[in-house]
Image (tube, rainbow, N blue to C red):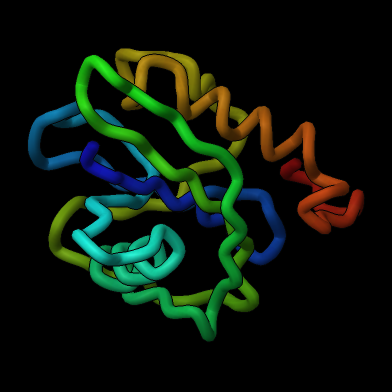
Length: 144
């Protein structure tokens, strides 16, 4: 099975999430989280940090990632590992693979005409909200 990852990056105040507008299939033109392939012999967390840096210039000095959940797709012969993190400080993001932008959290992330993943983006963000205590997110973060 091919391993893939998604990385959910929140702003320091947790009032915005970093997204990319896809420039290629699948999901051409739709917004998605940052992510990519897990290379042969690479563990998932290392791959998540590598993809995050390649696509945004964010490093492990800027964010600590937590493994949040996995999705398995036997018919597509792949699985997706989902990671979560809050930036320690603002970072100028840059990358040329996809257009990067910060989104507010008051959008309908289940809208499949705008967001990739057949509703998975909305599901992932709801799981973050549900587990905020376990993830160490203070109640003072208004975005969550």
